[in-house]
View 1: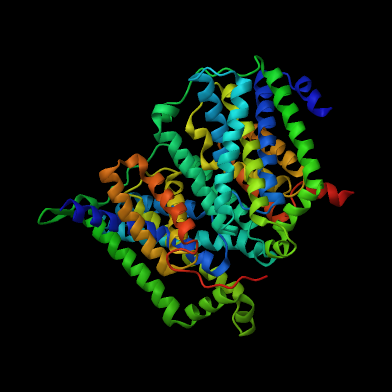
View 2 (view 1 turned 135 degrees about the horizontal axis):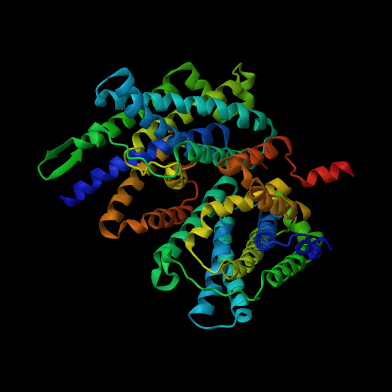
Length: 288
Length: 300
């Protein structure tokens, strides 16, 4: 309801653009939450899958003249497989090792995008990318609709026995293995699905912005997603959604503060972690 | 000849990386935490050194510019220590007892965003040119060239590493620190104050980061994002060397420096990060514990 009404409350083109961005961020936060919040795998490489989704879909459309609706599934599958590649490391590593390995994964992806100029155009970027839907409003409804579907599907998933399995791995992998849970398999599942969802978000990014440069998928992007999940409330369904909304709008609302804007953002992030360890979602739980 | 020259360049680079990575590994070894703001401590150190050397020491104190650079290294060291005190009080100390590996990491990302943008507001996005008198002086042995700056960097790094080693090995505090790293609770029972020593670790690490900034300043493009460009590599070094292991970090740092020097020579500078991180991932597959293994039992 609120989602459908949002564009009518916010009518300026600029803020409607922010709404589209917000819907994409919700998707990204949801994707990271599955891996990090429910499966407990510290992943700092989510920006890599976002990038793959964006680049694979754009290159298929621009160079090979595919239809968007064909290119998008291909990009999602590509991102998913890359997620499985990262899962190969995740199976062997845990905690901070995995964090840095996944960070390295994101750096490698970024560097490939910069250096493989014959395919990605490198830092020069790809220009004139058309969105799948002509106007911002349509694009918003499309992405928000998809985000809602992903939310509902994931909500069902985490309530199902699969969700219990993932949580068991998060809480104690060795005990879970003792109960017959194949940790490697389910971690790979979480990474694959998480990556595919990030890839899905990536499909919409280039069309929305119109250009595609590697800098959009810097490791800072991974940190932003991480911040959304943490600020909202990791391991809850609603938390990452709230986190994505708050952290998309907060920097925009702070625009009046000019240069202080991102400083306030940094302070806010630190304060939430210090004083609200369960994220914003935990406030609602406490109030209930 | 080229090989010798590039190896020397690699050692010089490697020393710079080791200086950045040492603090990270020290914090990890004692606290099991990653400090993402470490990069920005390096940047703050670089700016502190820059302003000390070019404005304060030469203009106010009136010392010659060679001495000014040396003074600025000490100033950056002090500034780093102050930042360490601050981040310990604000982030690590309050979060320490909750036993969570993720939250301090996120909180330090917040601190990193804060510091980066504070510096952006103060110094602007245009990079500064940090000239040291040592960079102008070059020596030549046969056909091998090296600058006085590289000699200075290697000397200062060696001294810092030696001092750290001696501190950990031979002093009471150092021994207590190693005890805390091994088992915080038991160390506490032996009359060691873990909180104090963890604070000390963070201060030492951050001071080293500040000092690394002073040494890196003339090499890097000195902008508010200077530290971020080295930190990812420093993380790679820490992992390649084995998390929390000082010896491993030193070996890995030098190795990465040398690899980088040869990558620039034979493959081009655009591929440096790629080569380093492919090495990292290969390392994680072949030997996930790093070059020098971390000795730790799995707690079930």
